[in-house]
Image (spheres, one colour):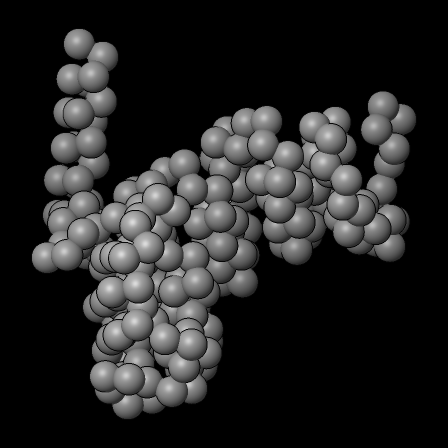
Length: 209
């Protein structure tokens, strides 16, 4: 019964997404796959044609022109909705064109993040990237919500909690950044960059202090 509930829930998510302006991230002619666990063969098959270093850096398109380079990134994100580097490139492309939907992009940048979080809700890196994007767009509350959701999926992973702390700091949520720094320390994570940033901003407090 429990597995059936999860299956029905997945169908509901897919149907609601397919009815939206963001399309259905669960449906594509090739894949789609979770990039974190996709085979190296499938990654190479897509990336050697549609996400080369020149495309990632937005400098050397393979199948189009610089103006239409979003088409290749869109293809990559159709196959791997949570391709972290492709999401970053799409955000940078939007900044270059000063547009929420760069030329030749299938969807808006916000849609690509929505598709990714729907396809793999537990990908904390996607949610961190989405939070940074939302904060830059002036949507602070929505950014914080993405990070709070990510915290639930991070659980006791020290690196994930630490990285979420860095994003909290980046968007000016210093108290939450401090909480994540303390949690990472308690979990045995030894890097000090987050603590150093908080100290430099006069926002640090020792754990238990």
